[in-house]
Image (cartoon, rainbow, N blue to C red):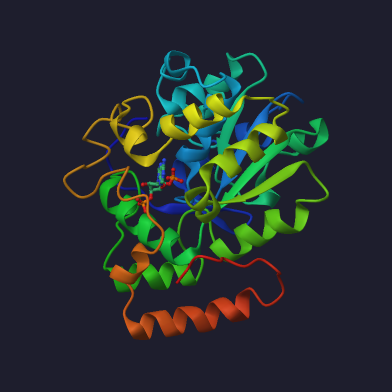
Amino acid sequence: MDGTTREAMSQVQGIPLPERVVKYWARVEHFQASKEDLLIATYPKAGTTWTQEVVDAILNDGNVEKCRRAPTHVRMPFLEMTSADGLNAGITKLEVMDPPRVIKTHLPFQLVPCSFWEAGCKVIYMARNPKDTVVSYYHFDRMNLNQPEPGTWQQYLEKFMTGQLGWGSWYDHVKGYWRERQNKKILYTFFEDMKEDPVREVTHIAQFLGKQLSKSVIDQIVQMTDFSAMRENPMANYSTIPDTIFDRTASEFMRKGEVGDWKNHFSAEEDAAFEEQHCKLMADCMLSFISWF
Ligand code: A3P
């Protein structure tokens, strides 16, 4: 990544994406996935990095040294992301890696390159309740100097609710993968479930990946991917990203890792308006977010 200028959003098929992503979109659209590749898909701030670390630990049988071979974005490139000059792109990293590759994306279902579906790739989707997601995204946009100015919390919440933030509407995003989960090889997971019972969730992900792991290896993976362990791990906490891009005086990447921090941000009025809209926009979907309250 390069550049420290906050940039505007542009659009692909009506979805707001950073200008640099849109500029090099054709490369993303034509990306050739291989059938052994694994896609980790999330709306921003849903626990992407956590899922990536869990998956890498599973694939490496809980071997700490192997999982520390490189920073997250090198081990598991970010499909659509690129530097402003297009040279340091997720695609470029992927092109020199042999399948099976673990690939990160925030793209909504309809923008995922067709080759992933044609090849029959497995996908792990992680969803997080929208209130904690928008709080986490707000703090991330305060510290990530490549992202547009977040403005005030009130302005930011309005943008989230109207689908104006990068990667578009949270509502459409979570529903898009949910609707397709039985038609494709999609394992749909929740941040809150992972917090509630990481042993259960890591075991579930390992089974999805076809890995038979002993109880002690699962326990080791849970310990390695715990919030405090990841926060101290320079290969998992994005501390390799320079301060000129991540302004750590504004916020940390590994900020709190909790369920329910939204209560420290939403006013009663904001909460009521949010709930009302949520009920309307999610009325056509069985998805529920159990741990909001
Ligand atoms: P907070 O800002 O609420 O702390 P993403 O990786 O999708 O950008 O998501 C980042 C969010 O996931 C941040 O949330 C971060 O702290 C949290 N996170 C990262 N690793 C975690 C872990 N091991 N356990 C719990 N939360 C984690």
